[in-house]
Length: 195
Ligand code: HEM
Image 1 (tube, protein in one colour):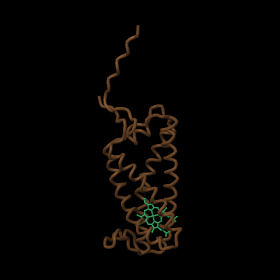
Image 2 (tube, rainbow, N blue to C red):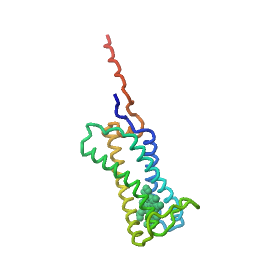
Image 3 (tube, rainbow, N blue to C red):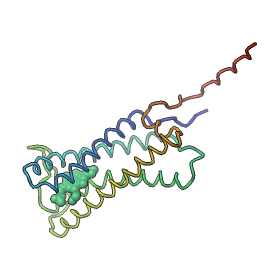
């Protein structure tokens, strides 16, 4: 008999926590970057671009890992509305992880700016030069980043609800701590009555 997995595979868990750190850092780097007029602006933008492209590549790897390894099912007793919210937020997170870096890259291409990953490594433009497109993509990038931040907060709230209130194993399926063993485990024999 094949049983559903009790937790995410190690690659999915490693990518989840690595990307969580990178994305939260990116949101703060992005806001700090546009709010700064000091010499730190150039320094932050030089970090923002390669880190954003790294997030794009990791999101593609993560999508492949996710398609090849079905996740553990949500608890049977979870209300349908919460299951729908969970699946919808996961699809949205994947979409934003892929679309935000592409919009950032397209924005710089539309503005005619080179996308440098290092002093010598330059990415090709993915959008024709256009001042109107640059303005639209710049706003789109900022609004999608705001949506990502709000979705991240909802996701964090849901994780804490599962881990601290329901204690239903959903959080531990991603942390790997305190999860139920996989496979068919024999029931322990009932203890003998004491005389
Ligand atoms: C998941 C990946 C990314 C996240 C979460 C992110 C997030 C952000 C945020 C929060 C801002 C500030 C928006 C504002 O308040 O106006 C920003 C600005 C910016 N981002 Fe990204 N970004 C990502 C990827 C990229 C990539 C891949 C590039 C380019 C290759 C890029 C280029 C830029 C630029 C040039 C700005 C400044 C725009 C301006 O001057 O208003 N970003 N980003």
